[in-house]
Amino acid sequence: MSVQYKRAGWVQIGTQAFKGLHLKFHVKKSLHPDPNAADIQVFGLSPASRALIGSLDTVTAPSTPAQTIVLMGGYEDAVQLLFLGNAKTIDHAKQGPDWVTHIVCGDGELDYKSAFSSFSMGAGTTLAQVITRLGSDMWLDTKTAMTQLAQLVPGGMKFLQGYSAHGRTVRELTRVTAKAEIEWSIQEGSLVLLAKGTGLKERAKIISAETGMVGSPDHGKPQRDGDISYLKVKCLLDGSIKPGRCIHLVSQATTGDYRCERVEHQGELDGPAWYSDVEMVPWGSASPAPPASASEAESEEAEPG
Image 1 (tube, one colour):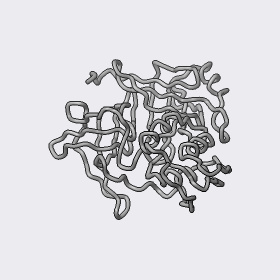
Image 2 (cartoon, rainbow, N blue to C red; image 1 turned 45 degrees about the vertical axis):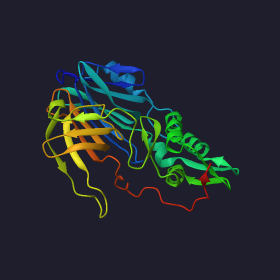
Image 3 (cartoon, rainbow, N blue to C red; image 1 turned 60 degrees about the horizontal axis):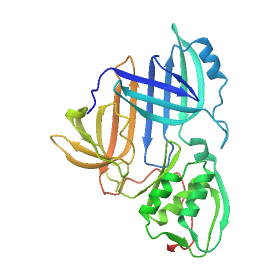
Image 4 (tube, rainbow, N blue to C red; image 1 turned 45 degrees about the horizontal axis):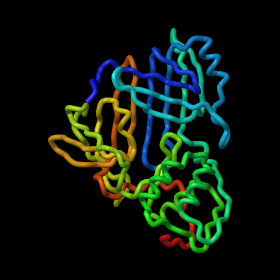
C-alpha cells in the first residue's frame, strides 16, 4: 500500500499541463451507458495561461475535435488518473483575489446524445462487426471492447438475416449488446463491454480500514422495486477504483467481493475533501437496471456463430 499523505494533483488541457496550483474537482463515473462527467476548478492561472486556454476548442458538435482534459490526483508517491474526457465549457471568473478557471467535462457525452447510425450489413454479419461500426459512429476506441467480446462470446454470434440500423447509436448499441447479455459503458474514451454481473479482469482492490476506508459501509435503499441495493463505502481518494473493478471489502460488519457500479472522486488540494465514494453490488449479481435512456426496439434474429 502506498503512503496516503502529501496530496498531489494537476490538470492537463490539450498538451498543456498546469501543476502547482490549487485544484478542486468532482468526478462521477458509472457502469451505466450515461457518460462519465467531471467538474474541475483551477485557481490562480496567469493571464497568459487564461488567454491560451480561452483560445482552445471545446465540444460544440458531434465528432468536433475538442481539447482533451486529463485530471490526475492522489498523493506524491501515487498520483493516478481520475478522469479523461473532453472539455464541454471552459470559463474564467474573478472570485475575490483569485481567478478561477472552471472546466466542465464529459467522456464521449455529445456523441452519446447526438450520434446517429444508418447502415445495413448482409447475412452472416457478426456481432463484432456491428459493435465495431456502432462504436465508430460514436467516435469511441473499440480495441479493448473487441478483446472483451472475444472472451464474453467465445464462439461468436452472427445475424443470419443481416443487420440494419437506423436511429440513435445509443439505442442501437443497447439493443445489440442485449442480445448477448452484455453491458456497455464509455470509460475514458473507450467502449467497455462486460457480462452482466461480472467485472474487469483486474486484481481485486482491497478496501479496509487499513487501506483508507472512512467510517463503515452503508446499505442504501434500492432506487426501484426489484433492484439490488447498493453497498456504499467512503475511502481516501483512490483513482484505481473504477466502474467494473472487483472490490474486496473488509469490515467488521461486511466482508466479501463486490463490483464497483459507481464512484465519485471529490477533492480540494487545500480543503477538507479528498475522498472516493463507491457504490457496489455483490460480485456475480445482476446490477440495478440503468435509467431508461435508450428505448428497446425490435431486433433481427441472431444466432451463435
